[in-house]
Amino acid sequence: MKIAVTTSGTDLEAPFEARFGRAPHFLIYDLEQSAFEVIDNQANAQAARGAGIQAAQSVCQRGAQVLLTGHCGPKAWDVLQAAGVEVFNIQASTVANALEQYNNGSLKPAGGANVRGHWS
Image (tube, rainbow, N blue to C red):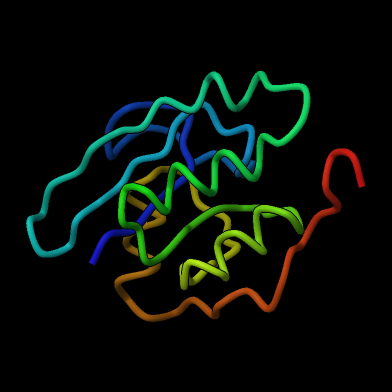
């Protein structure tokens, strides 16, 4: 299973980023392989419109089945739900801390978008 985590850095000790569509990076952690890749989201983060949709498409294209983020807007939410990605809105200090919270089973799935879209 692959887990996407929003971050401002490029490794497991990098700070967790609460924003989804405008997060600088996504770390995609593969639980089976105990390995990760980092997706640069700078182009989407700087987009005038559609950052959340484009970010959601990037995460889905990498095969993520779970997203750990702080906030997710309605358009990104729709894309993620259509792809079957389970979203968890959390607070964490680092990517490793976010993954630890997921692995210990203490998180509850989000019930929908928890912020308004930028252009809503």
